[in-house]
Length: 312
Image (cartoon, rainbow, N blue to C red; front, side, top):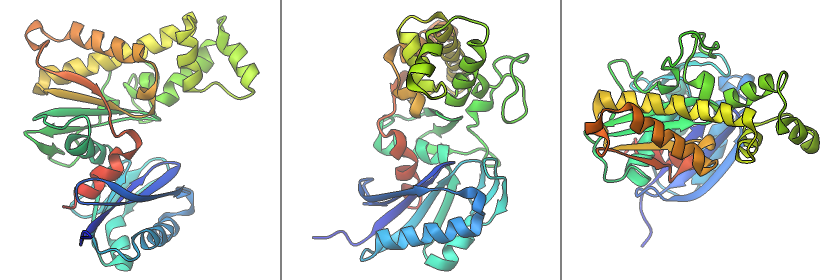
């Protein structure tokens, strides 16, 4: 017997948009991806998104559409207040989509969507209080408090990437000094490596020449695994700051589960081990057996699945 209603999940990223048709139990039935091309403007992006949703959902009864978007989002009104990648300001995305699709639309921060996805269908299942951190191009996060998505008084909770770890550190994209994102995001790891090899001997120079492309995050991790001191210092510092931030959150709201996702977490196990070691070092002894740090189970599908299920 065919299910009567389905959900549509959308994960809008800086380079790609993923659109999925999902069952109500979180399974992706069909999926399509396309370039974001956000610099074309919201209207053009929305028109392309509507075409993709219509094509994917043809012949299915759609209960609603959940959209995960980076940046500052007003979920109650479906408005993107600010998306820095494309300088989108006060874009009424929910209203624009509803005008063409006439469906229930939920617009949410993508990290919050991913948090909800991991909590319900991924590594956070059975937890009561959960912290999610995604480490990829940037760093974002979300909080599950008493089995509910906690978004704060102004729906701004979870900006983990902009916790200050070094007040004298490098300038972050947000304009502040020494944010976690300025040390541990994929872009920052890449940037710090490119700066470091200007004045140091490193196999990263050989890797760059051999592969005939600029250094990227994967190269830095590979060099670290090979024993390169420059790469190891960068990776160790990134893991140390992540662990310090996690320890502070553990001391603040006592989660039983911490889920780490994003492309950087697909790297070697030593990065995860270092994060765990540092976290344990900085929490009080009485907290040390109260939480688990887990790797994401959904990774790139977390926001897609979570956004869809926030409309249920």
